[in-house]
Length: 212
Image 1 (cartoon, rainbow, N blue to C red):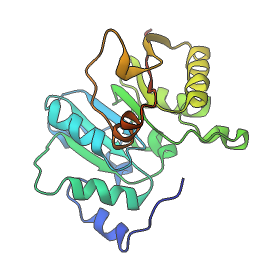
Image 2: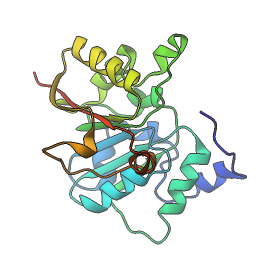
Image 3: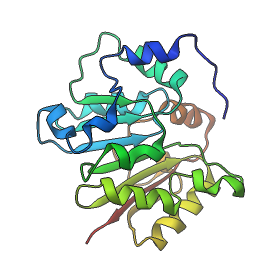
Image 4: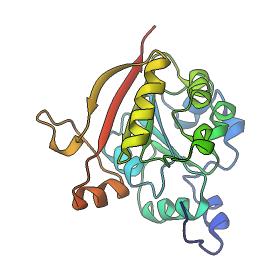
């Protein structure tokens, strides 16, 4: 996926008060950063940040962290946070492969919202539901493992159901068309999701858990 490069994106991101520039230094200490004992929810590949920002607004008693590797995307999130006061939100500009170097048994829920499906077989290990990533998540979940995934890509969704199931996750809820379910659930949309909804594309959803 290609993104428009933004001049001085790295400087803009680093100067944002919501952005944690050396997240590895906070491994095991994120609760103290938020100055409370509220649960911490992490979104990997947050893009422009629409979802994680709106979640932070809607649920002030939950701490949210958005992670994005592309600084030109992170800039959009920074712009969206102008004149907003969200003490329960932090952003990280780094690759998702670093998650187990950043967190240690601190995360309650992971959101995978419209992440890159990496459809080519050669890129399989880059998928956020590949077993290598699932093993990384094991190291950062606080207690119960909990992953919520939304995507418009049917192939990636099928792949994810298989890898999660093989890793002994169980599915609390699965939807093949989230916006037209008979029993709707509270749903905050991402920027991509809003566009796909207008186009009438089905949104695939799974709430996956692993309980010891």
